[in-house]
Amino acid sequence: MLTIARPFLDEMLDHLQACYPLEGCGLLAGDLDGLVTAVYPIDNILQSPTAYEMDPQQQVEAMLALEAAGWQMLAIYHSHPQGPPQPSATDIALAYYPEALHVVVSLREQNAPKVRAFQIMEQEVVEQKIKVTP
Ligand SMILES: [Zn+2]
Image (cartoon, rainbow, N blue to C red):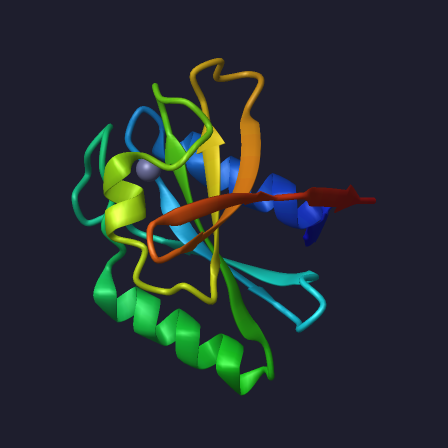
């Protein structure tokens, strides 16, 4: 389960809305209990409406910063501006960090984002509960 406080959820959604109609991406830091402790927006170097690749320099900096804070890379998030809230075949094939969850945000209805989280291990996709707290 992923537990995220409303301000962090809003921070992530604001970033993805700012990237719209392109895909946006970033990292969620958290503790061992799955509680989100920080949001790290990262540039999508592909600048595409249907694909993303995190800016490698920003990704490394974010990973070092969250490790220095004593946190884990809890999740990798990205948006599907026109797609469903589930990992694409490409997302599954490119899930390089099996210990991190994958948060997929569909903005097909732009004013009603759909947020879902998945564990992707060895091509197997298992949905995880998201708990939003105040
Ligand atoms: Zn995707």
